[in-house]
Image 1 (cartoon, rainbow, N blue to C red):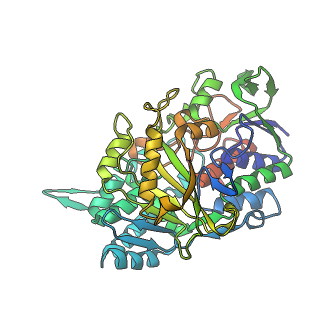
Image 2: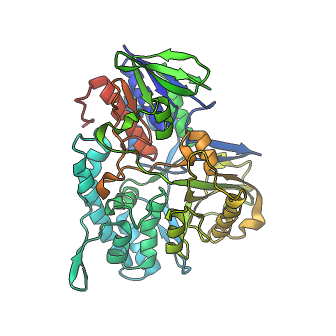
Image 3: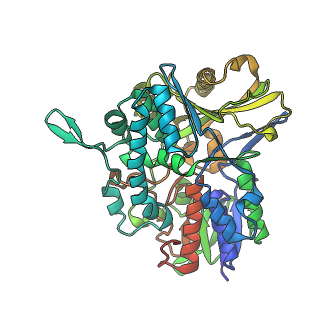
Length: 505
């Protein structure tokens, strides 16, 4: 039985802790804040409740597997997991809209043909078939196995089978998500639908590799899910699973150093000067915090993969509304900008500016647990924004408040009479994300993707320092709730079975 110190109480860290405890190890989780969950937070006020992180759950099978393998109670006995149907509603710049069913390629084809004209749905359906091929080619090495020593193969190979595109005397294949939209979907509304999946993770579709096509495929293949009471309930259930397996939690413990002895990790040093000895250290913290704790030795580049560049964060507006949620309201609505190029130029340009017309995601859960009574509604509006450089907030003090007002204006296209119904609202900025997660600038990690020279891979879960492992969104296989859960499984496997571990089969 080893003494294992886990730094951070995010989803990936708790997933690893629960699995390691079941394997017989003595596990202690040290968290610098006063609660668990990391990005999966909650705000409560006047009887209203809001998620401050992810609002929907893809790939629930990751957590079903975790709960089955760490106890007798399956996931569905610990949380009320429901499938969201329709999966999403889209409001496009030209005023047209489409409502897409959950986990149904045929249903999506029919809905898009009806909303956007004959042929649009078929082009989307054909695209999903090609996206499935990219998923099948990359699923195991990107999600279920430790990062290969020859990861360059993943970086060089584009798994998405692009359709040949003739342009003048040349034949080309789409290498980016934007090129798929332009050359294969051939409708600006379908292109906006496609690109919104990348933008939600802070990725520029003009540079994101074609393999990011797996994002919409995952929704249609495995569905979109919600946990009643909010996604914070999933974090609560995971925390309780850990404590039931005798994982100890120490809150208010900020790790500032990794102890070493005999050339391997030997414990953790904290901001108050105290230390905790350990045989193994699992760090579920962002790259900047880990580099500082490791005295600047950058242990995460073991595999030759640098931390994924993350210049994007999220701005979220939590809104308490008078009046009941209308029957038939979609849980999620994406309101697309009228100026996609302008939005992308602003967000991903050298200066990292706030766009004048943002794409926003509006979440309107049908959940009585989120409101004081049936005569009110809790609405969350989110948009991607640049993450300010480390140590510096975005200049212009009220800039984010002004941008939050733009988000509300955009959301009015999805929620009629929104401002008339508004009781109050709170704005969550990148600074709030940074406070919750410890990530410099409040940056949010994206999942790992193949191609692009390995630019969108994440460092492997082992490090240069024996006995030190990394877990969570900034490690392989990257950001997002299911990916963080997968990282916990990979780290537990590497510790329990050793470096020959190759993932569960």
